[in-house]
Picture: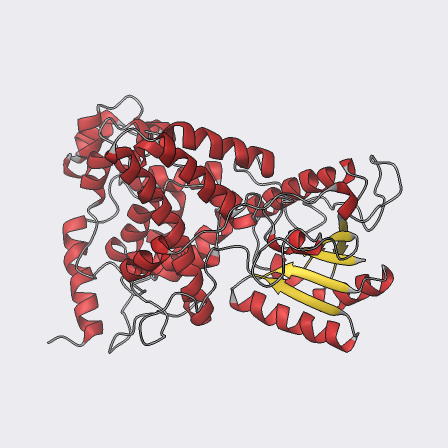
Length: 487
């Protein structure tokens, strides 16, 4: 008997550790293996240390994904064993209880995950139970793409050039039923382990947001739909939130309901169908976004402190203002800057925000309101279904000019010109800011220039701008120049 410990790989297909346990691939290089090493019993542990950093939209996504995964195993005469507690204790206990000779799992690269996995390895060693972890969540393991001096990259462009040229392995098949541990019992009951908890059991309320469908089936539908259309327009349309040229796979990749190899293979299939160089370049642009995800995973692995500390050092501390009322208005989508407010309201309504808009609202918080990026990161973590520590710390520090490959401090997004450029018809704004639905797009994009009387006449329930962008831009420049030690 073997145990496969599911974590951020809530799928049966394209799963390195599960495939290796089932004998489908060799543990060293991914080549075909001789055969199964014994039946595989899948396990998931609700770890309180992880749940402390969770939020209702992600817990909902997790539970729905686990429900689908458990059903998949039960259809094949097996089951997903569900347990609660510290994996350091639970995993060895489960191995002993099921007479397992080996425990396998896929690696995660955050500081918390690395510490946890080290402790689990030690506990299994003490119990004299074999264990093995596998590289699965990203294509290239930290340390495999480095500078000529062997250092990890801090600039994406150079990382991307090497990432793009590296060979990408093919997706892996799901294990056959005969490779899984046979679990007796009615498929409608909980044959082994505990039943799946409710969200309330885990200490969360049902999210107010309308979270997208979770699980592998929904992820594959999104991938298929995107590669049939949006991927060919991605380079041109991805910055426009109403043009639907994004994949919406971010939560699926975060939870591992779809494998990265399967996603990449679908993009390569799209390349074969591409009509002209423009469509090929569009596909490559999407692939570069997969590389960005991987780049930030490498950064987090080597610099776990970036979750709470600036990657880039300034000579002096940055003099963030951190005004509580301005922070409240930003969170509520009541800043009087339409594209910013639309984004913040989309976040609340859908536990998701379009990527271009994420950059706009992040720039507004850090460069217009002069509020510490960590306040924004914490708010996103509390509301996003797709929150990923590596991606979100990377994105926030990029906007705040404190991270790797960061936006220079003197490049400050103008929220009005950003709205006019990427939402010219104000369709996105009107969808999420109902107070402006009857307003002309030109008026919406000129909101900051209207007189108080014009604003009241146009949209009496929508707030006036809480700050003057031009003034705050100068304040931001002065703030960063002081941090740099400029005279």
